[in-house]
Image 1 (cartoon, helix red, strand yellow):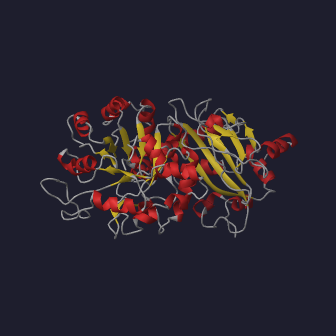
Image 2 (cartoon, rainbow over the protein chains, first blue to last red):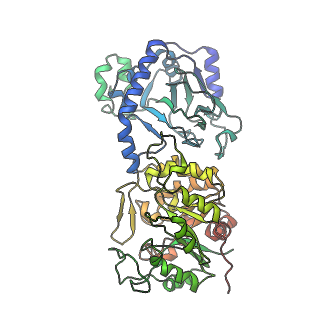
Image 3 (cartoon, each protein chain N blue to C red):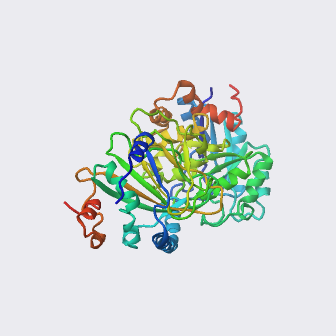
Length: 238
Length: 299
């Protein structure tokens, strides 16, 4: 586990995000890409049926229960390149809320508008977005409004066009890049002007509060959670 | 500022003069006439309304709609339907809209690939010619798309920026098998708790030719009037589309018994209590007057 440097800690406090280039690389990245592509393909038909039934959004889809589909999706939850920062920012008391293993289709507009995920009254809420394929500029890259995570920031108005948010920063990146951000802050997926889908994994964490995640939620993968740290991360301990 | 009910239905008893397809909810003897509607409109100070065809798509089945538009030309505008199997939809459209007060057409199916990952060629969409003709003739398109078609819309909206678009009923897109009639004879659409339209139709807000109806609450809400569970949807619509691109409607006659026409004339101020007086007036009729080019009322 790699702890953040003082510079990284200061940046996190001030800006609300950190970028880990090459966070996952080599064989680990290939293994992740292979599992992603296999399961995205396997789950697509069912997703389309759910879209038709009005039960799923038409513009992106998530592989259902990914942790139960391939252990590589478990291994990235506490991956060393960014997990140390997660632990640092949550006083070594972080829990996983869930993963979104997400394919976003190219579309004339982004599938989502600028938004924060949770109010300041919620416990510290952190997401890590990992690019599974290369995400060049104007191809659905993640964007964040630096400083918008602070309690005294804003108020902000949601603009109609992603690029119209004053002061925002976009994060194009290579496959394997991980972007960690404080979810109190405003963020979005930029428009994708290419014909290539954006493949990414969004991991959702929170500073532990009692009873937030039931011990049964991740019970199906308990065989992969043999260390006390992992059992704590997946709320498998009472 | 006029007050305009921008989406509702009227129909007569089935007769040789006014043929229509009977349904369990609209049996042959049932009638919900323009005159009955006008009583409600007078009572609640509503100046005009958009009559949306019901009871069939053929020209003959539009006779009652055309009769109402001819009888009350300063009170109503009309929206027609297009037979899905029409050999030439444009002929049908031209005939229905030829000086009759029909200003546009309602579509629920777009007819493109169901998979968003397929690169679309809009010229292959089944409704492409309808969109093209609407652009040529300045018709309004009235959209209540199926969930599977929602992703097709921005391609067409982008290609035809001159076509005025009205997304019906809060921009919702009903899922297959999710439509029923409730015990009060009203349409009922089962929807997910999380509003999926946030990722499809609400994303059309950046296109200035797109407006949205504030209507149909009863069909989606899991609560009684004034449907507090839908307040968040309204805040999103107001934020994204702004007060100049929302249009109030009742969906008469389905709402007559519950919650009643009068109650629905106050739904906008209940859902969006922070609107200014002029913003409320825009949503209650000013926007419909401008966007649909409603005629001035004679008296």
